[in-house]
Amino acid sequence: MDKDLVQFRYSMKKFKATRNYALSVVDFSKPYAFGRLNNDIIVLLSSLGITNEKLLQKQKDYFAWIAGATQNLPLAIDFLSSLGQHELVKKVLLDGLDDPAVYKQLRAQQMAEVNNFRKNDKPRTRMMIHKSRLIFGVCDPFSILREGEVFLRVTVGRKGATTAIHGDVLVVRNPCLHPGELVDHIHDLCHV
Image (tube, rainbow, N blue to C red):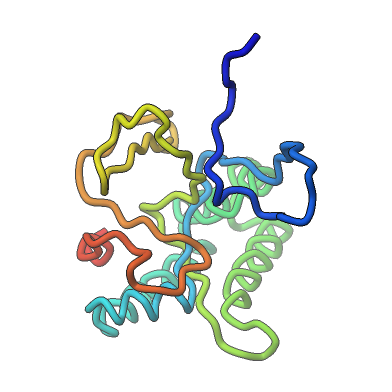
């Protein structure tokens, strides 16, 4: 069997000191894994013209979403599902938000999410963006896409895989240290 099953770019080889060409899978894409804005991405967005007011409003909305999880059943389910806390979602559905054990666990998740905004006693940002996905990119070996195009098919809760997105998307590498690593159409970030 001489057919190629996998194609790699030269830049994908990370360790040059070995002749071992074994393929190791270190992670894989998962449905509902949301992207997050971090300090580096926020600095880049700011340098590309996104105003501080828009970014601060995003952060206020995010904290309101977290705070609302103890008071609103759909928000609690959304919050816990976004964190991958599916067992706790079950407890919320079965026992309700008024159950003391459920409330305590939910508060712990809220505090953990808020505490993510500090690392080593320094402020940082790790704000989840709901209309986003953490994805793994692959090359286009058949050159189907034009330069600047990406193909995404995003899984949406209770709907499964949706149709492809026809429009502007923001693609960010992480770590991302240069404004040129962001796709040009960033204005949609503030409307999402």
